[in-house]
Image (cartoon, rainbow, N blue to C red; front, side, top):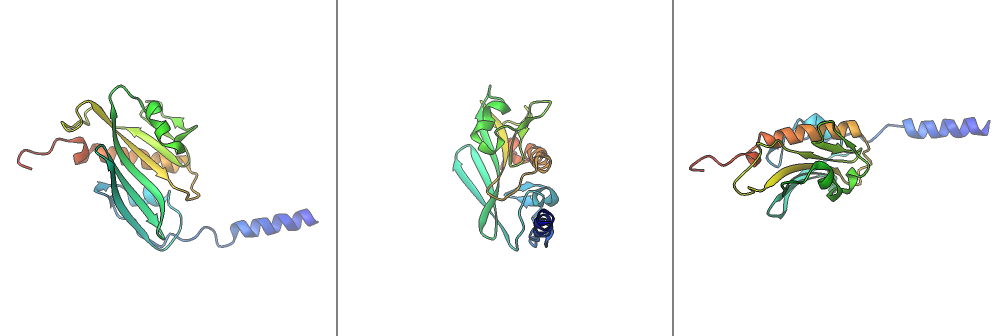
Length: 174
């Protein structure tokens, strides 16, 4: 009998009101990259407010940080790495990818909390002639553990970066 009561209490605690509502709106462009808001929202925790900030920690990295209720919960990054690297060699720089799944084409590696993607070979700029652009998606202490949602966001974000100015030379006169 006590096991049944404990189970009922556990189940009611789990089902309760469910996770906190995601009352914020995710913009369709995050730090200049167009991303489907539903894919982003799928890897964010509940809360009332969402803010973003761009960070440039070095000359080859741009990080778009998302904050829910003022707490960093997701980081989307673009980082140039030396040619000759591959996704499996780059991914250890993003600890959340440890033990992740490598895609069949070996361009993406992802777990339930993070992922790394390699852009297509045509993604090059004169600013980074001997480098390859990688993308990263990292949840930050958000309680999210959803490999399928991370994979979908990572692939979409990588494709969006490939279609952005990050992968093209600026037009003459710009």
